[in-house]
Amino acid sequence: MKLPHHLSIKNSHLHINGIDCITLAQTYGTPLYVTSEDRIVEQFQRYKKALSERYPRVQVLYAAKANGNLAVMRALAGLGAGADVFSSGELHLALDAGMPAEKLLFNGSSKTPADLALAVYKDVKVSVDSLEELHQLDGAAKAAGKITKIAFRVNPALEVPTHPKIATGLATSKFGIPHKEIPGAYREALSCTNVRPVGIHCHIGSQILDIEPFIRAAEVMVGIAAKLTDMGVQLEFIDLGGGLGISYRHDTDPAPTPEDYAAEVVPVFSAGVKACGISPELWVEPGRSLVADSTVLLTRVNSIKSAHKKFVNVDAGFNLLIRPAMYDAYHEVIVANKADAPLTTEYTVTGPICETGDILAPDRKLPDLAAGDIIAVLDTGAYGFSMSSQYNCRPRCPEVLVREGEAALMREGENTGDITARMQRPLWQR
Ligand code: LLP
Image (cartoon, rainbow, N blue to C red):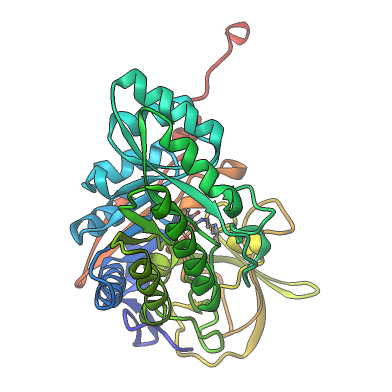
């Protein structure tokens, strides 16, 4: 199987940045998420370079929802990244990681009064999702005696080739304001006293393996920019969102690279803004394509059962990686201690959760397995830990970060006490 260059096989063991995954599993226990900081740095720099070579004013806003570990966010902050934050929690993460407020965009289709007040207080730009939210934000900014800069989230009504649960810019999606109503929304914003419209924002979906929809989105956005410029809106940025897919099937699914994205999308963008006579910043919000392939989830084989199929029961399930159960997502698996052994037997890798759907990888050809083997689930750096839960009272596992041959915990594992710690005994049970 093709592997990204931070993963390698030596002495039959899978290594990440030169560190033996089996040693990591022995040191920290399983299940265990292991992330390569070097890989994240490399991917971010590729993005920044590819875009900046074609347009002079670029901001890469990391989509914090993909992986909200502070160590990951800190590494990205150190490279100059901003962030797309989708909650007050993610806003705190980004600020704690050292990202400056001016490089953040507070997104979200259902913000609370507290979210809006926090954005105002921290001077973070807000992507406004409805007219009602516009007026709530205007009120919050007025109460604080501030002017808050905003964009509207545009719903460009674009079909995209991805799983329907992660297409976000369909005419029927819950996100944003229909593109035809956008000029009216800006007119309304211009009449508000405490918000100032300075940007436009869209995000058409996630895990998109075709560049064409991004080109369509850029066309819609520069078309809107022309109308807004005529209306007197001074655009400081146009945010094209995230969504670039990755090759989850390493040998068969080619994925567009950040260079492909830049080569095809940026010319449409720059011609469009030039025609408007403006030079706003180009913002993008990648999540998955920055962090997904940086990470492996190491999980130990508890037992093997031959029933109507050969089931490999491992210690990580959809409590730690929900993508296969939720989106029928495919993740490559490698037996980390038998990484170059012949693939002789078909197994279905199943988690420990009490649900029939708790299958990490169905029908995979793997080496002959035994209890104690360690399976690495690849490409789990995006929407892996960040979507984990404590279902079945399972503590979340630790996360380790590796960099230049060194490994360190970036999150301790939980224990059952952590799960019960905030539970309360109601008075009548005392
Ligand atoms: N910007 C906004 C406003 C978003 O909603 C998202 C993702 C992104 C940026 C980043 O998109 P990316 O570059 O990662 O595709 N849990 C799903 C993915 C949900 C994506 C939601 N929004 C999965 O595991 O496939």
